Image: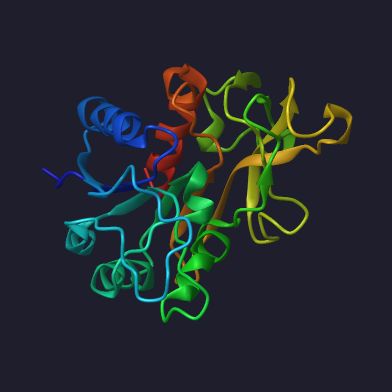
Length: 248
């Protein structure tokens, strides 16, 4: 019997209850899809480091050495400042060419101060996942999501409705992101009240795939509000994306 695929979730953000929603997703992946899942939580998950000073290390995610045995690493991070010894496990994983997946605020996973020796990790979202933090359209807005016709046959969107609505306010990533080497799967349209007049809001991709520098598959979505995970379309999208990243 083949060994179960091992999925390691790396979680640390203080806004979207990922410490609750991600373990639920991991349980579903484990119980219904035959995976082995490990969820690693930042010990300071509610203590966002908005402007860390040089040398400050306010984040701590024990267990990252388990990435060495992982078949897939999944990130839901926001403004972390992990110490070098923990980042070393992440770097080794990325260099291995194994697959990566991420949700929402992982576009801005890290927030090291200018001049910090680890400042390069602030580019993790842009360089690995396919987008940095730019802006969103306001907490009062929400998003209509639709399949991109050219990607309608992709395995990740099978079982996902052609259109649906989510609570997540739309992240703006265009025109530079996702990069040209990415394949967008779903497009979002910002609706309702928000930071900008709806007529001035642009459609933006909310899910895409690409590869890491080392050739590993990447699945990323800017969705991830706690209400999103309660909806069947988003759970199907997430599970399909993780299984695709694993090559299943």
